[in-house]
Image: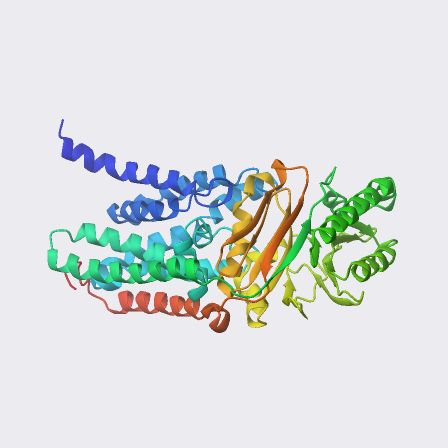
Length: 492
């Protein structure tokens, strides 16, 4: 048997299979941070080995299958939506791979290494402007690598995705240029230096950027729901159906208030609940608001119950968090903005100045949208409270997606999650508290949180790196197309 010939035939399929398997461990159910790096490197190699663009089409199906393995059961979606999202999840990845394969031969070697990361960044950013947010982004998978995740404080998650893609592209170009030692040396020195500087920065920030401000104790509460109350909204909230569960809903409210009493007794000065944990109707909303104001006054705490207020005969409801000051006044009301359910939100994120820093709030899926949450960074929030509601198969990944907003903007995040992982981090990403819904019956989490933010470049300049990456992608495409003749990979 001609082993080299056999290997030439077999190698692309091996690269595709291993790359797709690694992609199945990127985000969602089985997130393994390093899998994103391996998958990108192997699939770039697979695409570059194809002599015709259509020969790489099996990768579309392979990555869709990998996505289905990851996503199936992650959220309560209709089958057609799961199949559709399985293809959409790999869209930025595949777009960058096809562009890299098509353009690299038309550009100088150094410029060709920038095609994949810049196109990926451009597509990844544009996807976050859709209702999908950043939950499908490779860039959002790196909380397990603190030295890498700290790059978000400089450039947002866009810097993370660009770094992963660029180093994967460089590795492939070095492999192709291995018979040209001089070219390999120059490219390896540049790539190695950039990676070393960024990783050194990340390690130093994670280890040394410790907030020096005093801490405040935050108590966050979850009470398990015995049934899916969101399903009532899908049925237009029938009054007769809801009325049959009045006693059950009152019982949940009493448990939430009792847990909040425990939090106050344990020294919590800020107390809030997980997303929609209290289920109210338009009939009893005012009575609860009066009760909540009295609780804040009597315990001298900032009290922020999260609730869903059902509207009879409607598919819209108020999924909100209401902040009461220690004097019982209402400091702000925030209604969830980024939601799969109809929402009446005004889209304005709120904060309140307190003796414990500037406190803001967002709700669950809101945290998947970097540009939206950057508004809290621009407001110089110190602590952000995040009521959330997940599903078992997307924990802890979906919590980590939201925690990256804290790294980007330098504020501490406390995310209290029903049916998922609750976590608190400071502005440099150190975990202050963690609680697993399915592994404990006492779902009161106490976390001592710094009262001041950590400086962050991204909080000041926002999405500039994303814009620069999109401009770079456009310049490279125009250079390759308008430039005409192929420059070849031997040109420096």
